[in-house]
Length: 190
Image 1: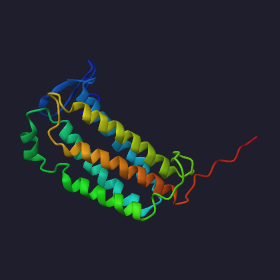
Image 2: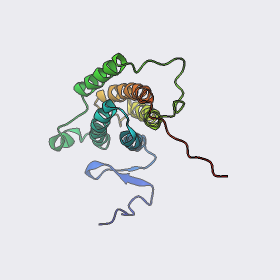
Image 3: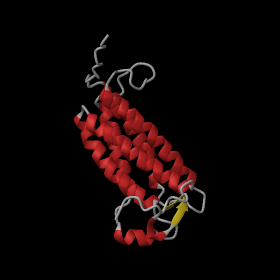
Image 4: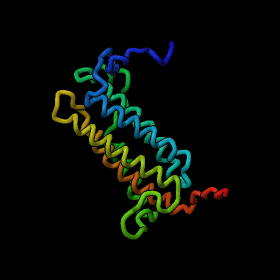
């Protein structure tokens, strides 16, 4: 079976359980934003200079896949999804992120002066963390946009998780910048 199914050529995409939505639907925007966040974490994971980053990022990526499963579940099919996918973003996930906030702050991730200027330190992993952070904020806004609508996602922990994750990513950017592993610029050839 080819990846090119051509089913989306008319501007629709599949959710779980045979549900189809317009690619411009707010639920699809939320799914896409979380997917973009997960992809943005890939370069950060590869470039990470700090062990803490290498511990946090892969776990978060796995949880984001769970989160996308919840977003891809049409309203009313939550119990159907839960029967085959018991893992959910829940309070322990948020607590885990809170614990990392405390560890990173205690470790000195807040030691900087003035506003954080992404990329200023010349540390690629820090710049990637800032890109992931803004992708996380967009995903959070897109999930919030679903609240109060017929398409809301019943799991209120998703918003808390994304909010806390953006805090962790901001701290990881500062933490990575302190690693001192700056990007070496290529020499100019005249």
